[in-house]
Length: 455
Picture 1: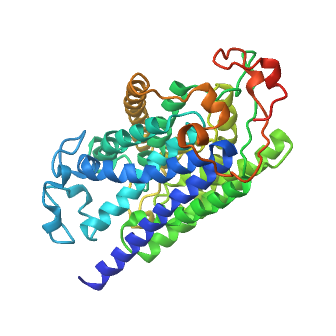
Picture 2: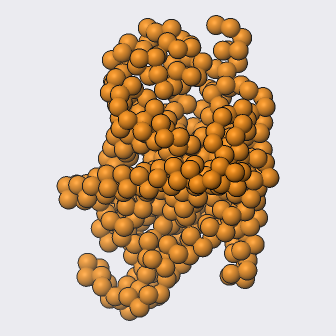
Picture 3: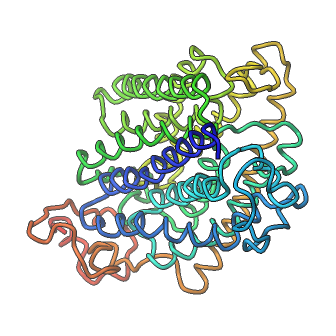
């Protein structure tokens, strides 16, 4: 193995480990934004989802995504039947089986690991949106199907030599493949699950349900910020100093601009600079630049970040008005800005950035061709994931069930689902939301008693 392959391999594995570490960030952000009575449940979901994702992607997902096949799905190298363990480690050894990934000159299992952590991230996105009312086993089953079948099919379209890639669709580090897939899957889950008890009243009032630990959420945001410096630059799959430096600065620039703009917009709209929206602003910028980071100039990355900071604030507000209960803002962060970031390539891509040959976007003289391809990809992926995810959620709902009982939700999923508490030594005082709900027949205590109850 020559020195360049060695350096490339170390780079890919290091970045893959940073992306894996983002699981801690998601766990911290989601549990911090949730109520204390659901902390164990949130942590447990984020802990087990990577194991589920790893199994699904290993068993079938990798082959469906990167195996040579048709424009829709991979058909060769399924279940590692190709004997990849015995193949040469670098270069074009996988042409004829995994030729879409043969461009990366690192060992096979380094490629697999890096793609695996991306797959796990898509599944983790769903966790926060469906938090505080989904059955633990139902989330596990859905995550397995998502990573076994749904994610790999879309991944094949874009990164596996499928039909979208042949049209020229661009997604450098996963704005569509990771974030939009996770966002669309989360959206169907939110719709089918319904809102948390007490979130909305029949007269249309929206009740805020604050998270229990903003310090934990802030720590998680820093972990995710760090992880993104592996997520985007690592997608070069090679230690190219110029490219990775450009991508890193573009990533950071979009993140900080989105954070600043989201904070300012929230301050203007609500009168207060809310730290929760600052966190989601940062994440929105990082999501939006993910697909475009290798294709746009540094000043444009700052612009993309600024726009995403506006989108996330009004996205959170709009989803709430639509009665789509998303405790962590995942729909506004990952779905809305995954879509925006993907479309931004069609507007701002500049041929030759970071040494990558692309079509120019609309504002660089390329006309509407690239924008049209990007829009087609957004619509196609959205339709496919919405339909397949909805079918999956509905089957789960009508078999093992999808939602915990009202009693379990009120008492907390930590006790009902896990028989455990995150803070057993402390008496936690929580505001009751039960009196805000007009139709809870399963609760035996009088509604007036709930008005003063502390649960």
